[in-house]
Amino acid sequence: MMTKNVNLAPKASIPKAVVITSFYRDESNWKNTEHYFFSNVSNMDSSEIMEALRSINSDLLVPAEYGLPTNAPLRHPDEKPSGIDDNCYIEFDADEHISFREKPISSMGAEGDIAEIIANIKEVKENGSIQSYRELTESIHTERVIHAQNLSLSI
Image (cartoon, rainbow, N blue to C red):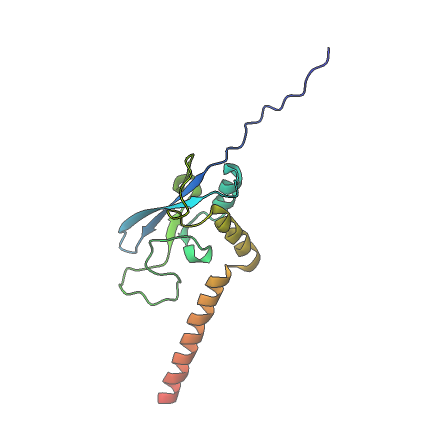
C-alpha cells in the first residue's frame, strides 16, 4: 500500500493590512501610543513580515532609520529637542506592536505598503540606515561643523 506524502505545515496567512503600533516614552516616562496602517499590496505572508520586523526589536529604536512612522517628536538623536524630555526613540517589539487585518484599507488611509518597510529593514542591514536618514545625519553634521567654524571665527 502506497502512502501519500502529505504536508501538514500550516498555510502562511496573507494579511490585507498591517498595523504598526508606535510606543513613545519620553525621559520623564510620559507614554504615547499611535497606530499606523499599511497596505499589503505585494501579498507578503505574515511570517515574512514578522521575521523582518522582529529583527529590529529594541527599547531604543530610532524609527527614522527604517522609515517607520513615529509619534516621537524628533527624527534623529542629534537634533535639538524643543523640550527637555524630548527624544527620538520608540520602544518596538514586533510581537506586541504588530497586528494584521483581513480587510484591505484604501491607499488614502494607508501610510504606505508594508513591503517598503521590509525593504528599508534590508537596506539598514546592508548600509546602516536608509538613504533619507543618512542624508539627515550628514545635514546635521554639516550644520554643526559650520556652527563650530563660525564660533572659532568669532573668537
